[in-house]
Image (tube, rainbow, N blue to C red; front, side, top):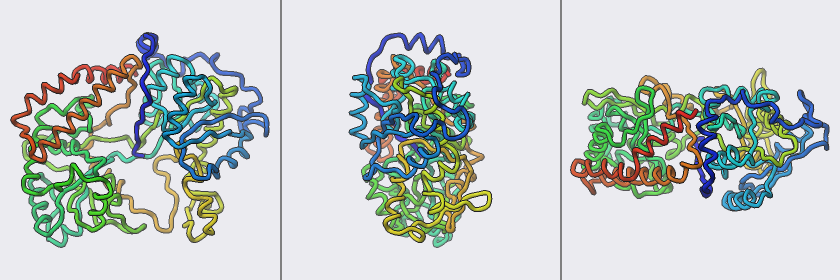
Amino acid sequence: MKRKKLLLSLVAVTMTIMTLATGCAKKSAESASGSSMKSIGDMHEKGLPIVDAGKYSFSLFADDSSKTGKYYMMPVLEKQTGIKVNLQTFPFEIAKEKLSLALSSGDYADVIAGWTLSDTDILKYGVDMKTFIPLEDYFKKYCPNIEKILDLPGVRDAMTAPDGHIYSIPYALEAPQVDFSPYINTKWLKKLGLQMPKTTEDLRNVLKAFKTAGLIPFSADPNNKHLNYLAGWFGMSMDDLGFTMADDKLTFGANTAQYKNSIKYLNSLYKEGLIDPEIFTQDLNQWKAKGAQDKYGVVIAYGSGDFMPYAAGSKPDWEPLPVLTSGDGSTPVWLRSSYGTSVLKNQVVITDKAKNPAAICRWWDNAFELENSLQTNRGPLGKTLIKEGDGYRSLDATKVLSKEEQDEYSWPNLWIQSLPHYIPAGFKVKEDNPAFDEKGGTDKAYQSALTKKPIPEYWVSVKDSAKFSDEQTAIKDYIKQKSAQWISGQADVDKEWDSYVKQLDTLGLQDYIKTRLDAIKQK
């Protein structure tokens, strides 16, 4: 998934966090005192059930948009574990308001989960206030599945707060090493007798041919343009905040010559009518409508199916545009988005209201058993998911279920989909018409150009978070505004470059960079 970040209101707190961040950051999670763990009570330490039926239940608050409020997996897990979960679910906006009130009043659930939590909440209510409890000792003693997830590359680091503790259940997802990239229309390449571009000038010539043929030569997902990635053709591929990895180190690049050269190149394409004139103004529906009519030549997207769906089992008429060379002597590069796993670190916390955190951790560990996780996405075992040899096969629900069952076992009614599940990277469920692995092909095509490391996860302390957030918003918005003006020709990058660089510093760039670097060093 690729993933959204939602922040609650930032509240000023005491300087305690500063002491915690500097004095405790080097402590490993394993060095935390075992005495912090609560009594296991009636919990069985191994096997199922976790408790005898009726002996324990916990409350779980989460955001969800299910119309029924019934989830197939909840009674399945209750039967397995003996633990009943008392759900408190609300649509996101309502959940966000209710959570804020609950944390302020002290009337909150045993477990809080979903998209309503942020890094700042973990730091404030975990590190500082101890409302959210540390979980790493429970994981180590009782949760082999969660421990395996934490041992995936980069996951434990991402999950560990500045004081050395882990406050949430990990949500690890298989993720491509390349998230968004340009895709090129191979059907039209063949029609026009064109070769796959290898250089930026090759691309210019192909786009000209596409334009002559009546296509929109170049466009991008309105919500994820990622034009900064293309600066990699000039030696420095970067994210929308202007950061990249150079020599395995976090570096700001949106004030460099490489970035400026990429802007000048894109502006030259725009001047020649080779970029969608609506690239900065269209919405998602408009972009998709044009794609569905096969009007695009090259498009930046997560996958070509986002704008031109293709039948299951078939190969799309699109391929990843190679990482191009610019001819200016720079080495082409592309920013790696992951090692193959993406981790969401704020999805589930256990509060100090919980009477048996160990049992709750075991409940989650059991939910991460492969067969359980598969059912949260593929449907009930024995109905739409069947065991087949050493693996599993997913059946077409429209062929094996009645209309009533299709509704009952639809994706939103299987599981609260803001809650974690875990399917190991590379694990494939057999299908009669498997989807074409477009993202795998993109990863392979880009492999030699990828940065060795993705941009690292980080924690900004509560005392710094409000200022950091303001700086980040101002800097991101300014970069976005100026790039749009320069590419579309509303302003001249050469004339404005020096004032642009100065304005970035005025907006707090140097302090912003230092805070990012310090947040990484804390880990």
